[in-house]
Amino acid sequence: MFRTLACLLLSIAIFSTIAQAKPEMPAAIATAHPLATQAGFEILDQGGNAFDAAVAITAALAVVEPTGSGLGGGGFWLLHRDSDQFQTMLDGREKAPSAAHRNMYLDKSGKADPKLSLNGPLSAGIPGVPAALAHLTEQYGNLSLAQNLSPAIRYAQQGFAVTEHYQKLAQFRLDVLRSYSTSQAIFLKNGQIPALGEMIIQTDLANTLQQIANQGRDGFYTGKIADKLVKNVQKQGGIWTLEDLKNYHLVERKTIVGNYKGYRITSANLPSSGGITLLSILNQLETLPFDAASPSQQQHFIIEAMRRSYRDRNHYLGDSDFITVPTIKLTSKHYAKQLVSTINFDTATPNMIFKKSPAAKGEDTSHFSVIDQNGNRVSATLSINYPFGSGFVAKGTGVLLNDEMDDFSSQQGNANGYGLIADSSANEIAPNKRPLSSMTPTFIENNKKIMVIGTPGGSRIITMVLLGILDFVDDKNALQIVSEPRFHHQHLPNYVQIESSGFNDNETEQLKLRGHSIKKLNRQYGNMQVVIYNKATQQLSAASDPRGEGESQVRIVKR
Image 1 (spheres, one colour):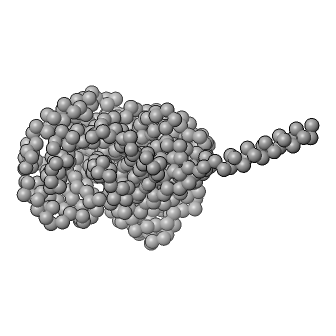
Image 2 (cartoon, helix red, strand yellow):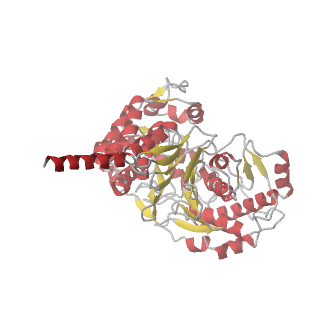
Image 3 (spheres, rainbow, N blue to C red):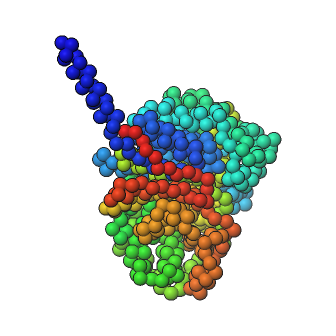
């Protein structure tokens, strides 16, 4: 008996040694803030998968990057589960309150007033992030919601340090932050922009996150937190109701899928315009003699394709739960040929209609990319719209509300905060409708390599992802992809926006000679986060945009 017991103990010891000797696998994370990247790896190290990490990162960004995302906002999470190749999009986009109506942001003279749709709680849609945190954990994660939210709760309690990026965006939204005592108390210091290194502590937000950890989605959409949100929103002129919060539900949607030169493209579906517009541009480029063209002509082709796809975006696209969208037509190769037939290979096509509209100001939104040790992937773009969203924090919750209602078309022919002009009713305001978005979380892959990509940047998001894809196809590495200079055209206003650096005078002059109007911005834009997997070498690489303050890591995670 003792010999049998000894053999059993020896077998257990040998098995334990073998288990400990199993090879460790790497994972890669790129986010807009070092603390968010750390939160993702903290969860992976505890046995979580990419979807658990995505919950931790989303919640962490809600704490440490209030300029771009938060519990009071929304987003899209593009998921790939490697075990069965399942892919889906989680639609956590905000919804218009039930009392919303299409004329709610018009002044007494009947003209759109951007202050109404950008500042204060009247500009806020019903948030989707809390529902996404619960759904992602329950349906796809390995860990509990309490585990996944623990890093964010700790960050909110202990605080995060003010950076130059924070100061810049706080300056941009200083007036609206000063307008509300609740916002000023958290994000400013005696009404002024906090000094570098000053700690932003958010005790109320930590308590709200703890309620979600304890109760799931109901911890936000019903009960004490919901009561506080509605009471304070209504007190400050907003139109939320308890029923609006109770009735909010995240939706899983089919992804937009296409191909470009042998690569499979998977991207966001409506109410994001990203996937449809991105595929439309790529389909046009594939039809054109793009590879044989000179660099200047390639830029010309890209700009002309952008113009046509954005024209269609602004005419056809909106919440597909409310309107019929010709998605199959807009993403077809045949339709791309029709669009290309109107492109002059040498000169810019004149716009049939020209209207002046404001250029996009500031930077907003957030993105992160993850590939875990088992090949699961997440590409997620989150937003509260403008920097610091509506600028309004509901008392006792720590929740900074979005101003995503500005993403609706308040009035046909009128530009929103990013200069986008709708020429149809497809994206007009309606109760419970989701506003059209430009967020474009994307996967691109062939039999050799995979890229997870996305970026903030308002209306320029789609074109940044486009340029990143073209660089990936050209075999550029992750750091090159996030660093390359950017340009953008969105049909109206009728000019090419180019970054403050990266384009020499000769390149700009060549575009002008082709008839393009050029607007050189006084800054760089975007904050791209990229993860790449090389199937041949089984190596991961990652990069965070040098324009931002994010962090990318490739690190060993124990099985």
